[in-house]
Image (cartoon, rainbow, N blue to C red; front, side, top):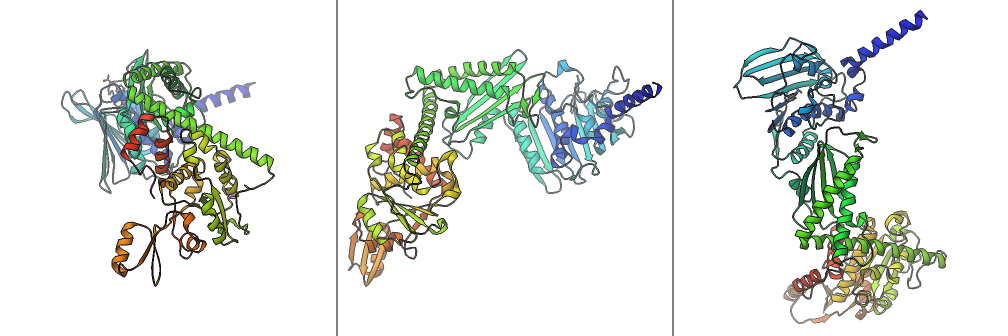
Length: 632
Ligand code: 0RA
């Protein structure tokens, strides 16, 4: 019995010891995540978070962070200064308690800290415990106070080091990480810059200056526009569809701030922040916003009779969306693998209702923007349903013809996909010469009906779900969308071969759009090509193939006007030899490899030509009269 008692005493003693800063040094990862690069930078976040808390309270406007030559880092703010008065319980200067006692970091009085950052909330004491040297300098009550520490222990008592102006306040902390704890002790400018930019966006008006002594590198982060500038920054290399939508509201103790801006792309970029911490795993604030966005857009679309194919889904309304949801709350519960998912259940409803009211009002007041967003979502809905139909069609086809290839495909004999080529040819008239001209071993030919686009003009779904497209998918072999498998690719070069006229350009645009939306991997992998067909043949001693009027002029200037010049009207007018020489013979042909940018442009052109937005289409056709096609 006595033994048991003493062992109990022993373990409670031990626990007490481990609750102190020894515990931090014993298991650093529990406090800062790791002892590698991330953990090292976490020290800076802890110190800067305290200064940001001061800024959030409205007491601090500038934070200077300096990477010093000696490997230490300094964080200086113009806040109120850490209190230097004696702590009521410990009877020592409050600042010393904050820096030497675990869990006493910074946040003494909860009332004055409605919100606070810091994932672990352990603050300065963890940083001092993991630093071989730590110095604090405080301007407060007309004096400069200072104290230094080594691995969490004071080197001397807090002392007055000089005078300060009566109204001049602030805190400067300089620390050198303990290199026996960290696998690297080198701070990286770019990691710091990225996080400081984020903090500055999230705290409008706050200025953060970052400097690195050794390299002389300097960067300042300061955004009067706050979140509005944040979404603009996210969309900076994209085409924004409208001015940012911004709203902010305080509901009880919760501050909700949101900024939204759509771009013409397809990616979704929704960032959530809680007390300026990036909630990478999302959570109730992000769910609340997404729910409201979907509902607000559907309500607007229904009210204005814009939707024809049922409700838009969340995925539909989030294509090309950039949004920031930043909330500030007093007691965040973080969940998930990396503790970056907000769990507070009451927040979902709050963010939902704030967002719903604000978005509804914004849409009512800005109908042009609302219509743009609805139309963009409707396009996404169409593309999704087209993809579904195309997939169904292929599955059905495959079910009927066991492993069968399209009847229209004239295949090559080689099965080595790394050296085979498929020519997708406009119209049966061109397919004839192509079939006789080709090298049977490695070149396959498949005609597609030239008029698909014109026939189906008003309906993108039908075009993309058409028999022609299904044939192409089956011939290529990879499947589409999430069924896509690159290893099933049947030809390494898939060549679009169309006439050099408006119809040909239309078909080229359609096919590129199709590849862009449903098989982007093929484009990225460099498997899609365009045969560049010549406009003229000039005969003088030998044949010259000419691809533009400019080229013709300079050729004639060189070889003389007495030449026989023939203009090609279409592929169908070439005889097999001509076709072989100009478009199919690897030694003499000109092929253009399609890039993802080419395809994105085609997709945009296609959307404007095919979209439901009659006004946009009219405008587009007016602006591009006669050449509303992609020209590569
Ligand atoms: C507690 C109370 C007060 C300020 C701070 C902490 C404080 C902490 C840090 C850490 C880095 N910079 C900081 N600035 C301020 C307010 C004390 C008062 O009422 O004057």
